[in-house]
Length: 114
Image (cartoon, rainbow, N blue to C red; front, side, top):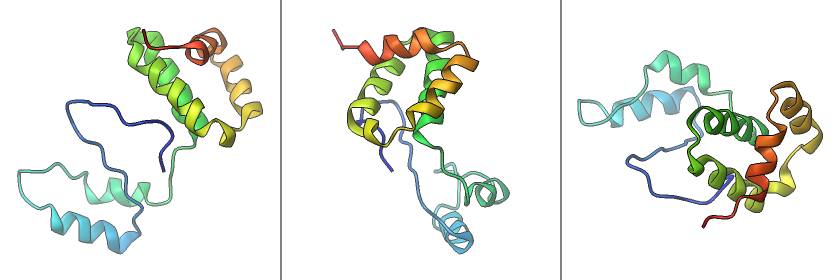
């Protein structure tokens, strides 16, 4: 699932869709000290979860508010451009209001990299 566009960072994040057997296979494939693989229990808890776009946007707004790093605004702007048609706007607006993030969201919505 891709919400935004790729950008260069200092690491790589990989998102996989796994069932419980897949968790065990992944852990077996990346044994040793060269890779970080989360504990099996943590991975199994995550098997049924996927972060909805609205949640990702809210978290990035919170990260931006605490760090003032423009990369979060850029990420959100690209998510809206690429995946905005799948957004549950009503749900997002409710959370923006509850978390006092509406102004920050407007900033992200208008963001244009300089």
